[in-house]
Image 1 (spheres, helix red, strand yellow):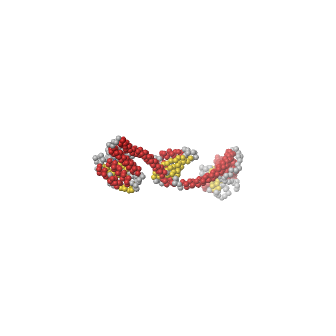
Image 2 (cartoon, rainbow, N blue to C red):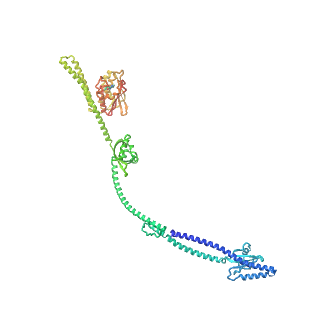
Image 3 (cartoon, rainbow, N blue to C red):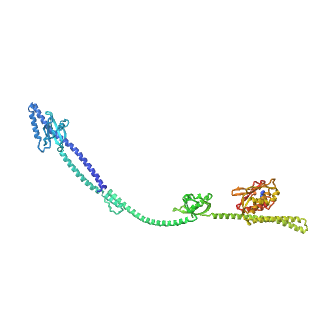
Length: 632
Ligand code: ADP
């Protein structure tokens, strides 16, 4: 029998309750019965002794009244003792023992307990008997317990009493107690048997349910179960059966889903495998191409960077990931790029943009083609973009733009040039033609008086025309006739120019200061000498009216390198003409010497040396400084 079954537990509880109840009844009944027996025996034996004493007292009083007491006292005692002995001693099967002790403890009747010694002969017994307070007491003698009841007869100072063995005193009590115990035991066994039957009957459905539950938990859904009653256990069984049906259905559903899931897993594995293959191919492609590949989220945070991207920005992948893409772009391009990237969030989800990017090798141009990746909900959450370094193309484009611009400028210049040339060349021809017509008319009239003057003026016009043509020829040669570039000390170039102009310098008494430590310049020595000579020539020309004309040749530091300058304290130039004077045939004073081609020629030579030329002046009368740079 298993101790943890409901049956056993209920039986143990009921058995315990029964045993406790039986014991309680037994103990209570024993105690109560014993008290009753005590009271009963006390009254029986008291009555017996009191009857004897009554009778003794009456005889004693009778003898006293008849004054025969003294004469018959001894006989009276002996006869009383005889009577007492004969009436209360019944032989060997005697169960109650009377005794009489005199005032000194001598046994007048010794209870006759089949032995030489008996309780009345014990001193301790006499001491107990003498104790006035007790009418009865219990006494132990030779391993047996006795109940003693006694009375005192004062006339003779005798103690009369009975000794009753406890086994005799409680004979009925013991037999009643044994019967009660037997009845209780039988009742308990019977009750337990009946309860066990009832409990077994009551717990049978629960037991069955338990077995069915165990079967269910071990996977057996077909364990036989029946609803046998409509009470709570019946309802419980019914619920269990419903639950089992539900579980059966759930298991069947699960099995179906499991089959589907298994197929799905197999399919996913196949897809994952294919994806892995594809990812490997894609990775191989991405990692081995020079184009930059990146992926970023809607906040432009980098989610993927290809090795070529890391290499371009000289950064580690972990440092670049999470960084805002726009941080890597030139700040002037950021707003434009952001607007362009917004196009990846609307159909067709693509955009193309070019931007300047700060790479490890400086600012470079990249062309990006971006595509928004659609998520399941139809929104763009990530953008993938492929970029290519187009710096060289951009440079080529810029150069082409510059060339086109230059060409346009040159075309415009050429148009102006052609117009100016044709206009300026036309003017001496018109002069010559005019004079020739006058000469023709004068010759018809045979008037030759003005002929020498006309011829002289026509010669002047033709000289002017030749000068113009020489200058034009010189100008047209620049850029075509190129002498070998060489490193020349600028001081040597200045000296050459001054040598060529020495006559006019001396004639006009002009002081020219040349700074020390002038650098070495690389370029076409002959052309550069022409530049310095022309500038010095102009400076001399436009300072000669000054009292103390001073010209300074030197260099200063500029943003793009050395700036060469020729400074004078001559008539100066109004800032509004700073550009104009470099044009062809542009002279601020039409009556001044020269053809107005000099500065245009200089400008052309300087540009051929990749340099710039400009003039600085605080206005008319305040002198001017011609500056130029050379990057040959
Ligand atoms: P030109 O050969 O006639 O001197 P340029 O082209 O050399 O022609 O000069 C154009 C004009 O620029 C001059 O006519 C003059 O008005 C002005 N110019 C040039 N150099 C100076 C200078 N040092 N001071 C003042 N004006 C100058």
